[in-house]
Length: 220
Image (cartoon, rainbow, N blue to C red; front, side):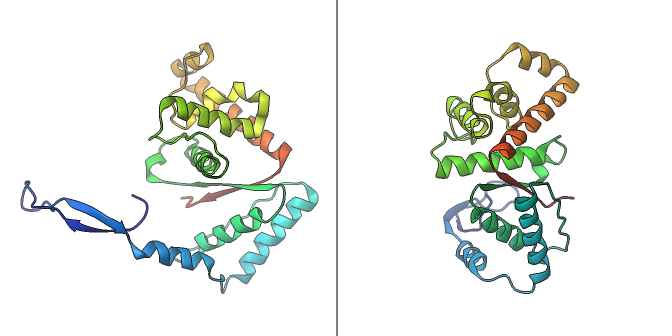
């Protein structure tokens, strides 16, 4: 689980002496509310970083050219708050959108895992706010495939067919077998090339339609 929760033991452990008894989740922890409150509080002591981010974003809007900003710091230094401030800044800019990917141990050895994380989060946002079908693991295979198509059509419209099968593969969604996909599954290099090409087309389509801010968090 990715949110704190309160729990209580249920019965006794049936395993060895070192095993803990099973737990029952009671409710989301008050930490969730505290996190929400922290997000709403003004971000203090980071004016220099905020000015840098705001200036770079303004340059992108004005010049229609890409910019890269790297924020580093130890754990607890406010990097996540800066990311949240940037997401709000983008949300307030008409015709702009942010995609946020986060490194995780689950994808530590997976090529393009950061990109998959960014697409997953965008798909979740689309399902919550735009009525897209869910592409999450709890949904049916048909729903997940529709969710991938909604995600790609936002970028490429009617040109989405060439990317859907491979970006669905990247997101771990079981896609229908096609000759191109079958050939790529037999050839790791071909699969890697197809995935990179599909991502290039996806982000190219997005940038034709809007200003795009790609946020990558917890890089190691």
